[in-house]
Length: 344
Image (cartoon, rainbow, N blue to C red; front, side):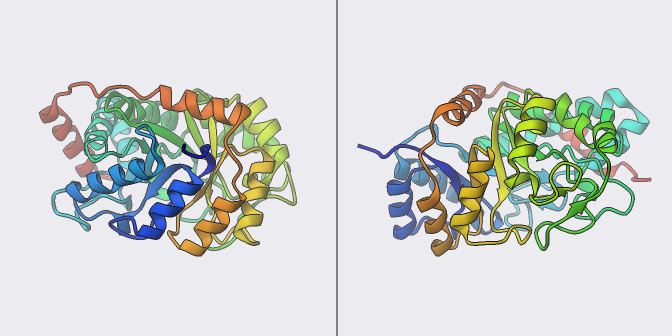
């Protein structure tokens, strides 16, 4: 009998699962697997890898995630294999929106559908997108062109169209980085950002996109300290922010996962970070490095998914549907339009 599914998502080291990884996954039962460029060599290889993970955990519906945003964040791309397309960064849709909003919305949906086709056919069922952060003057370039626009209204419109394409293609979305990474002046991959904006400023800009997409099946937290909300803890580790802002004020009732625990914004052992994030109210933790010693710590510290967290996980997966047919030629033309639009 398989063990109970546990509250973490794991990475893996390479193009195939090692025997140690298979054993760890079979015993610890991570809820899902996340892939990076180091894991992506070809479509056939990815089909084998995703199938091998699901065989190891004994769950045909076990989610496999990836960050396939387009632009500079694209794990499956031509730099890894010439068979994969280069997709536009999110801000390309925003630039097109300035010229023709209707075309931009259709384009975002069609490009999302194309991307979903690439993912679903190799067994990837969750894409960590849309990025709903609203960049502000003086913020770090870690977000920049990953944002659809500088206007919360335009971001929300384009992200909903983009996500509709993924859902039509059988791929679930994860909105990030709640409640906002757009004001961070440092890269949370390298250090902990601290935001000093007032609550009224956050509510007027940063929170609006997430509140407008509160029906998204899944969300990813920001490793950012919002001093007006919690001076001590970044959102990922803040019970106050998760309970009072994300759940109550923004109204998000979906599955809440952390950003990568390997990022330098968080300190302490992986066991401590895992426990702190789950105790703060995250449903699952995300660990991406593929380093076995770290993976084991996260696995050991992750309890079984239960209660509301388990219900949210099940509800998220139920929103995945069979891919629908689409007009490939029109989708490719729309992608070309987004790729060639001039950025002001």
